[in-house]
Image: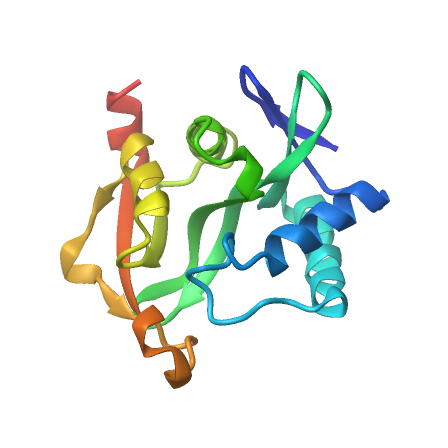
Length: 188
């Protein structure tokens, strides 16, 4: 199911092809891509998340969408919007924007391009009032994308991620970025 597109990307639901499953596994198990996460997913764990993501997108229209290059049809990773809950830091139902691309597609502006379109999709199609994003405090690649798409850091809302295990203390401090529909519309 085609969700939206950009100049270079098609954002869609995941399909059951081996290519989609392989890329999803690759990005969830690659040490470079997962540098700021305390775990790498096994194939079985990845397949379970893959199925949940397909179902979520089909049911709600929100999810981390498969991102493919228009020019070649190559799948590059995911970009999208999901409801999150890291209470008390982020209230239940808040919509988060996120992305994860295979390392070979980094540095080409694809995450920013897709994320800008995802913001538009969230505000225009889903009528959201606000979208947030968060990352480990020193994840400069992700926070750079947040800044490029017009989000601003909410410094007082920085938090210690409660789901990151204490075995990975250096991954617990997180920064939070936000953008409201009003601010987004004013910048268009």
